[in-house]
Length: 242
Image (cartoon, rainbow, N blue to C red; front, top):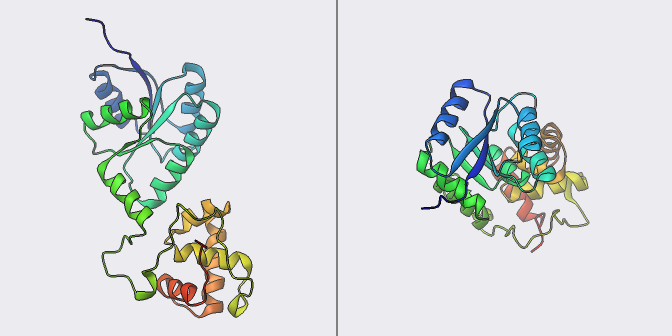
């Protein structure tokens, strides 16, 4: 019998025990060859340039260069190498930046060998290698469902649909309460349910800048929290155009 094609993998994780454990686990899986291991983002980018692996199994929280930036650089410079994130974190502030950077797979570190092997095979075939909980979170985001299990306020029900929206929010030319155009943009994205980190990525600014805009618009509009900000945005027509 002829063996199937071998998938060449590089592992990136800053914790030595975890990294060596993943390498050992992958070494037991048929059709997978670990060709390198890196302890930080700079090293994994260098290894990809040297070894041209098929897949990188990427941790997110690493020194020198984090997994999101390493993913972005790998996908920009080496599009033949796919990235599967393997991380402890499944929150929105970790998930969405990684996917925007070009990761095709996303698993948490409680994934078993079979799930990791399936994700690697999926991204090699051009599909997405996502864990069930990540798939569920993406569907909730696309459908506009809130993460909070509490019922949304009535003003939050007509959620704008992101897929048909433009890249930047469109706001009314006459802005209430002295809001600036950028503050209105931030308010529109809050109304869409984006976190501070997602807003920062959307507007190409730092999270601290987003926080400053939010503090300013909260003061101008006299709202106390994000729920009131959402209600204010819909009341004044500050939202993405459909």
